[in-house]
Image (cartoon, rainbow, N blue to C red; front, side):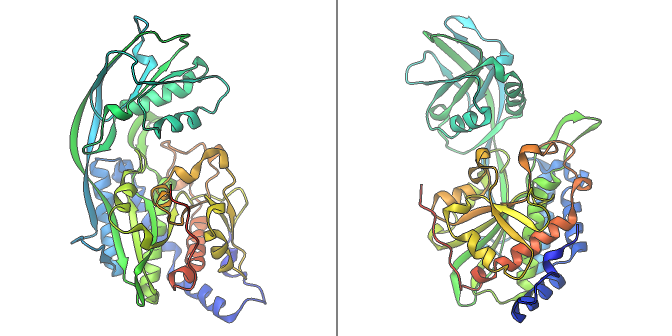
Length: 433
């Protein structure tokens, strides 16, 4: 695709805007974008799975890019890694009996950060997921609940259940000290008219392991205590079940594309060197297994001082609106989107509200934690997720990407963010949860 928005400024566009367009073309170069995303999505990164050597290698690469750009470590860090630890949970066995009858192993999925047993159904929230519902919506509602739950899943969701089982066999993670049984979820595939008795025995191994966001900053000139954050997650699924001779889930679009944007924007703003607010550039870890990197990051700074979060997720292909377009999740929750669009007047690029509200995307990426704390934290994406057949597969590779689309979107974010970076505009806050 042609990158029209950068060269299609109308005759009505002001001279300063044309100057910015020229700067963004010059400072955000396609060959550099290609180099970064090729590196992050290469086979030798092994899919950047959480707790793997691949994600460590990816972090080292991002650190090198931040250092070369001239960024400084985040406050309190000696380097660019923001280190913390998680408990890695690997299931060993799961046994469930309802009304005295054992449930087949392939019909059990358990989500819990450590071993536990239930001798009965006392204190449980028993939920039925009937036919005709959106399974993932029902699953996410359960996952986000703080109650112990037994979820009885209609057999019409057998394929969904099979995928869920395969996912949980890979293991899960939690912050050290999480209350394991308080939020345990037991999913059972089958029909049960009345649960009179229940026993559950779940055994797992738990190991404390290191994780790390990669964070760099450019201190603000006149408003150093006001933060504008640019983020994207650099983890993906790692090595998965072999598909057509390939087992590496490279995650080129999800989310090497967003991470590439963060690095490119860091270089851009460092070269401009005119930011009045402090800019924070963060590659989040562990998004794919629960958003733990962004959760940890949100506790390392005062959210009331964060002016905005530009979370960049999957910009590797054209949006449903066509070239020179992207959408913003939670568009209606603040005036973040209108501010960005105002800064793009005179260009062909346009930001749209999220066209997939049924997907609940606002709460499915790393913006969610800071948004819940009141920050105008939004995700920018171009992915046509309802029809994206490469999502979470080994086919999400560099060869599937439209690099022109990635470059155009990065440049649009650079142009659209400038009044927030300069301190001129402050997006309205999102009501705290």
